[in-house]
Length: 167
Length: 167
DNA sequence: TTAAACTTTCAGTAATTATTGAAAGTGAAA
DNA sequence: TTTCACTTTCAATAATTACTGAAAGTTTAA
Image 1 (tube, rainbow over the protein chains, first blue to last red):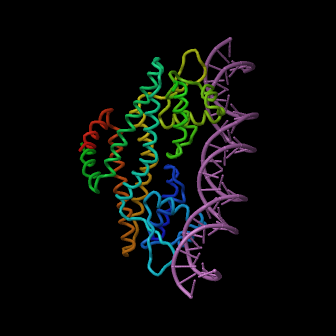
Image 2 (image 1 turned 180 degrees about the horizontal axis):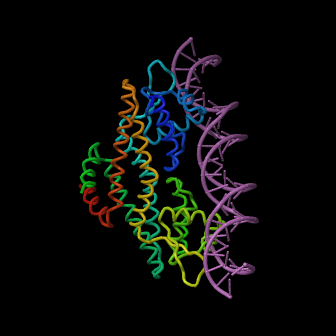
Image 3 (image 1 turned 90 degrees about the vertical axis):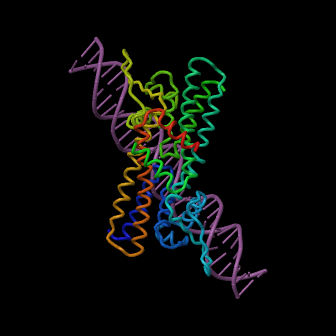
């Protein structure tokens, strides 16, 4: 496989996987493109490479910045904005985990707690409360693990879990 | 809050969260409905409660069975199929993890490995290979952890991680 | 067998989500 | 202050995805 071919394949693979994760295709492709680029790219570069409109490129770059996984890079002597994605994959993983946790898991925990506050002690209601409690418990534990992972340094995941997995 | 109200809120909450996870709304709602139901439900029950068509109900129940989180339950003396969701949340979590791992993570690992096989040793190509290697490494580690979680018993997650989180 | 009770499929349609492109906005240089 | 180079917004439209409902298929009981 040739390098350029591999880059394109990577960008497309990422794009098609994105749907499984509730992320739009273009957003994933823009991120992949910036990740494999040696130097920062302008909106025009992104538009040309991915064959998308200015509005779409702008919107998705914006979303990626919002997720904290793409940065605006100033290039001296240039008026255009240039963008880049950090090449540190561990940092990327932590950042994505942090955002998903905040956007998706924490609201669930909040809702599940609210749902336990029902003023009814029939057997049926008790079953329901037990269910919410169990859901809450698993979710909270997962949330705690992710919290720990976010704060950990690069080797924590490897060392701790490699050990655990081998047990 | 009244019990019925709480049940409906739970079903709707689940439905609206589902989009973040690449799962369709109805599928999540059907699962939530079966989870909060005391006894197995028929396709007609699901149709009536969620106000959806027979085709839609059938399709989504089928998908849930395919995910291994809903079962067909035979009720003696009835010709209709009845469906139920297991109330053991830890099992549910493991089952979902198992399926997502198989459907989403494992194909990524495979692709990332393929992408490292480029016959080019320019600096640029080396950078690309390094990137794929790093992505592969984080993904493989996460995959290993999940593998362990799937095989673990109910208290493994809690005991192991509670310790770790408190560190 | 046949018929009734039920399940599945799928073409057409609806609903949702993403994209375009042109116009408005912004700010720096002249 | 005007113009130029760029960024942002957003209404219209396209593309995708989900849903309906009726017809075809299947199973069971008589």
